Image 1 (cartoon, one colour):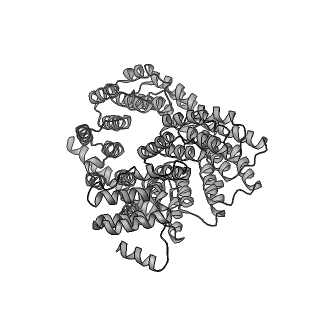
Image 2 (tube, rainbow, N blue to C red):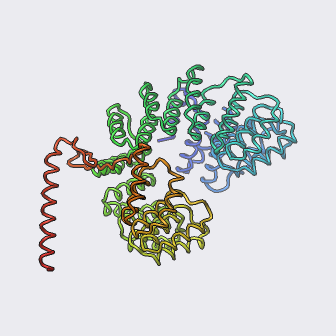
Image 3 (cartoon, rainbow, N blue to C red):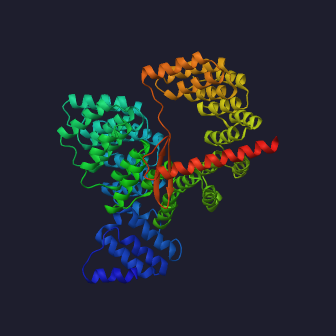
Amino acid sequence: MTLLVYQEMLRKLIYPDETTYPFVFRACSCLLDVQNGKTIHAHVVKLGLDSFYFVSVAFQEMYRGCGGQMWNEHEVIDKRSVKDFNYWNSSISEASNYENVEESFRLFTKMRMKNFELDSCTVVHLLRMFVDLNLLKTGKIIHGLVVLNKLTEDMSVNTALLSMYSKLGSLGDARLLFDKMPEKDGVVWNVMISGYSQHGYPEKSMELMSFMVKSGVGADLFTAIPAVSSIKQLKSIEWGRQMHAFVLRCCLDYQVSLHNALIDMYCECNHLNYARKVFDLVKNKTVVSWSTMIKGCVSHNQSLDAFSLFTYMKLDGTKPDFVTVINILPACVNIGALKQVKYLHGYSSKSGLTSFSSVNTAILISYAKCGAIEMARKLFDGEKVDSKDIITWNSMISAYSKHGDWSKCFMLYNQMKQSNMKPDQVTFLGLLTACVNSGLVEEGRGLFNAMESYGFRPCQEHYTCMVDLLGRAGHINEARQLIKTMPMKPDAQVWAALLSACKLHCETEIAEFAAKELLDMEPKNAGNYILLSNIYAAAGQWAGVAKMRSFLRDTGLKKTPGCSWLEIQGHLHEFRVADRSHPKSGEIYAILQNLEVEIMEIRDKDLGIRA
C-alpha cells in the first residue's frame, strides 16, 4: 500500500520530501523488493535527499534487509565531498533530534577526522541533545572545544551553553558564563532568570530581573512567567501585586499561560479572591486554567467551590485531564463524597487516564479516606507487581494504618520487601501511625530504630508518631527524653502530641512545660489554650482554668468550630456544633434526643442487672 501511494504521488507530480522516504524504504524492506529499492534510491540521490541522515539510514537498512550486507553503512558519508559542510550538520541535527547519542558522536568524530572546523550550528544541535539526555559532563567537553575553536564570541553558542548549564542545574557555571558574555539580549537574561527560578533560587531570580530592567533590556512573556513562579515560591503578595501591575503596564497579559501563572501565584500567596478575579477575566480558559483554580480552592478548604468549578468546566466544554482529576479528588475526600470518587474513577477509566500511576494512586487514597478500604485494595491488587511504585505501596500501607488494621500494614510491608522494593521514610511513617492507632509500643520502637539501616534518619513526623505512641501508652517521661535527643528543633506537632498525652494521663507538670513550648510557637492557636485548660480542670487546678479562660476572653481568640459533611443520595449536607441552619434541623435534633433517651435507658438497665 505504501509503495502504491508513493507511485501515485509521482504520477501526479507530487514530489515526496525527506520525511516520506524512510517509510518507502521500509516498505521495500518488508517486501524484500531490492530492485524497486535501488530505483527509489537512485531517485533519492537525484533529488539530493540522501543528504538527510534518516533517509540514508533507511536505505542502508533496506539493503541489509534484502539479502544481507549489500551496502556499507558508512559508504554514504565516506563518498560525500569533504566540502559538504551542510551534510554533516544536517546529519548531526537529525541524529540529535532523535536523541541518538552514539550516532551523533560517531558523525561528529568523523566530521573532525575530515578536518572540518567546529561551527556554531553543530555545537547548538549537540548541546540541545545533551540537555534532553541530562549529559552535563559531555556538555562541558563540548564547551572546551568551543573555547579551542574560538567560538566564545558567538551569541547563539553562548546562549546554548547558558541554557544547558541552567537547565541541568549547574547554576554556578551558568552565572560565570553569563557574567563573561560580551553582549546579552533578552533571551540570555530570560534563560538565567528562569534557571534560578526553576532550581529554587527565587530571590536571585527576582534580583536578576531587576538588573535586567535597569539595564534597559525589555522584559517579555518569557521574563514574566519565571518571575511570577519565583514570587509564588516566596509567597510574597506585595511582590505579586507589583509583578501583576508590571505585566499589565507592559501589555504582557495577552497569553493565557501567564494568566494561569498569576492564578497559581495568588493561590500560593493565600489570596484566593485575587486568583478568582484573574480567573474570571480569562476569556479563553484552558484545562490548565480550570485545574489551577480548582487546586487553589481545594488547598484553601473550599471544597464546594472546587466542585462548582469542576461542574462549570465540563459545561464549558473543557475536558478534564489527569491533573484535573488529581486536583479535584481531595475535595471529594474533604466532604466524604464517595459517589464523586466513583464517578471520577469511572471517568478516568473511560478516558484512559488510569494509565497514569499518579491517577490510580490518587483514586486509591481517596477510596481509603472515604472509608471504602475494600475498593482501595481492589485497585491496588489490580496493578501488576512490577508496575507498583513506592508511592502505590505507601498509599495502601497508609490506608490500612488510618483504618487501624495494623496486621495488614505489616503484611504489605513484608510483601513490599519481598518484591525488592526498598521502603522509604513515608513507608515507616505509615507503619508508625499504625502502631500509634493500635498501641503497639514494642513494634513501634523496633521500626523507629530500623530506619537507619535503610540509610535515612527519622524526621519530625517520625518523632511525632513516637512521642504520641509512648505518650498514649503512659511512657510520658520516655517521650520527653526522646524529644531531648532529637537532632532538630521539635516543631509544634511534637509538643502537641506530648501535651495530649499529658491530658490523657493527668501529668500537669510536664503538660505546663510542653504547653509553654507549644504556645511560644503557636500563640494564636486557641485550641492549645483550651487543651491546657482541660488539663488543669482534670487535675482540679481551677486557678489555672480561670487564667486560661480569662486569657482567651481578653485576647478574643476562638477555636475554629469543627465541620462535618455527609453525602446522601448525591446531595452534600454540612453540619457544625450547635448548628441549626439545616432545613431539617428540628427533625435531626429530635432524633438525637430520642437516641439520648434510649442510651440512658440501656445504661440504667445495665446498672440494675449488675446491682
